[in-house]
Amino acid sequence: MIKFSKAVSSLRTSEIRDLMSLATRPDIISFAGGMPGNELFPVEEINRIYNSLPLDIKQTAFQYGPTPGYPPLLEALKEHLRKKGLPVDKNFLMITTGSLQAINILGKVFVDPGDLVVTENPCFIGAISALKSYQAELKGIDLNQDGIDVEKLKNFLQKNKSIPPKFIYLTLNFHNPAGTLYTQERKKELVPILQENDLLLIEDDAYGDLYFDEEAEKRVVPMKALYENELTICYTGSFSKILGPGFRLGWMLVPEEIYKKAELVKQSVDACSPNFTQVLACEFVQSGQIYDYISRMRKIYKRRKDSMADAIRKYFPEEITWNEPRGGFYIWLKLPPQIDIISVLKKTIEQGAVFVVGKTFDPAGLDNSHFRLSYSHTAEDKIERGIQIIGDVLKEELKKK
Image 1: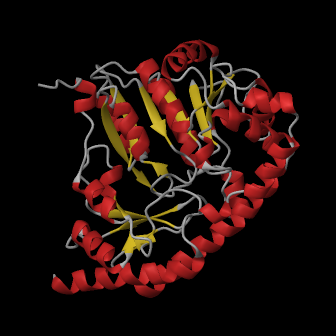
Image 2: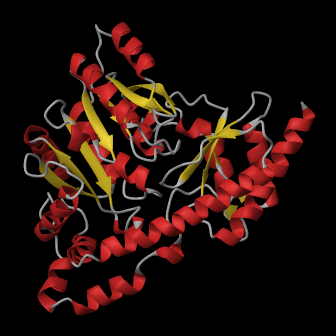
Image 3: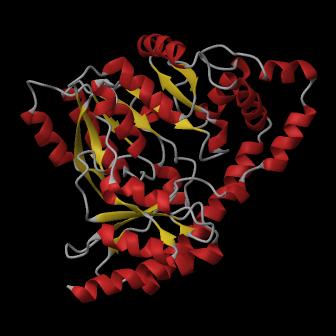
């Protein structure tokens, strides 16, 4: 008899994954994937970069690299992060195999089986899976339009003084899946709460570069840039949304004491992230091409968001409520209680459109009152048709009740 570990046994599957496996027809309109469209990648720019590299750098790209990262990329990334106001000279920077690996490494550094970790509810599914793989007990605190609900957070921490959480995991900029952009006031309100409870913050900032307007740009300043001296913060980021997920490159910026443990963990996981893509990313950042590319992507994602928002207003019943995002990839929608979202998903897949239900992003796996639409991967000419399919099914479900 095969005996699996307790850690693996704690990972959950669901009927949702089974449904999503059916949604692979080439004609289906997908609002499910949180990823850029293939047609948006800077293929020509990367081709030119690779072809212009001298032979010795190409050879280096094929080789193993240092565990913390390709040194020239580390220097280029430091300059990129310094422009965001991040304290790169007071902390240590490590390249990871996607930002999910950074979260996973930090989970391994801090979590013992049964440890309590606080997240937002909803929460990035990758973080839920990573933390559960170390047998963390997750407590999701509800989000509102300004960020995590500070009163609920304070009440929970007060009730758990005897068993304090190991850390809190937050996505402050264009949250996945909720699209939330924290207000400056909400960030400020969090500081004394985290200080009083001696609570480490893991700040996940995969989407902060993808703002749609000037006010949002002013609000995406990381907490690590604002409150480095007041709090202990581990900051993570990614090239997946601003270059390409296939590069499998992310990073963490953390205090030295944490960095030393994280480096040991990474050595045991994969020794080093791909040197090949690190070399290419380094040239893309050093040359400044990344800034022109991100600027173009902001405009495209904003157009796609506008197309989706207009279609939602046109085709969805008014009982569906939502907030229009200021950046990122996602719109998060709330259902009236009488609608069965799994039934809606099955019917929309049959008719040619797919999305992700809220239960996926609930640390407790219970929420059937929300769903997520991603506009990043879908061309504008398909968005309206896909939203119309979902809207028609939602209206049918409402008529039944």
